[in-house]
Image (cartoon, rainbow, N blue to C red):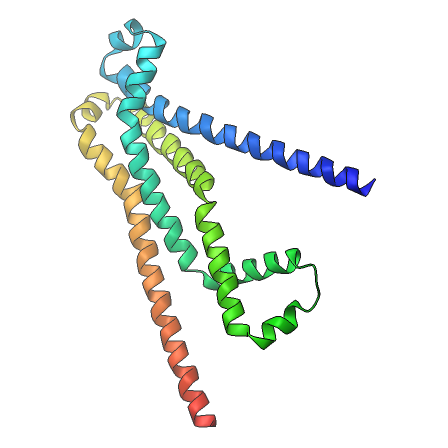
Length: 215
């Protein structure tokens, strides 16, 4: 009975993973089509009406995909910074994963024997796993952020009767969007990381001085 339940759980987890992957792909496709389609609708409504669906989709993807790839890369950097800026969380997650997968009990004793090297191995392994399996999360984040930001911006300009201003200054508006929603958050996180690293170094220096005084 327990074995059958385990098999059922594995099948369900597999289906969930497939559904998530399909959702990510659909979301990414929608992100590459919808904002540019709205822009074509604003720019020349006759093109929007006259062109067939496949032509509209191909033009939208060809115009939006470079922006998508740029933002995917930017968010990739941001997530890398966030991973590196929280080593305690990463180490705790690594320890929990190892503890769950550990079949024999003397794991803590092994850690005590060679704590530094073992901890280093665990964290490197966890970091590698996190960095290699995060692509799906980055796809979700990029797609959701781009779909929301660009669509809301374009629709807002339309309802505020600023369509002409949008078409005249589309490059400038695009730069503002990239700065506010994609580039500035990375710079902020980078400075936070540098600040934390300085703090860790200072704390480490204090502890070494204290240890030397005790000796």
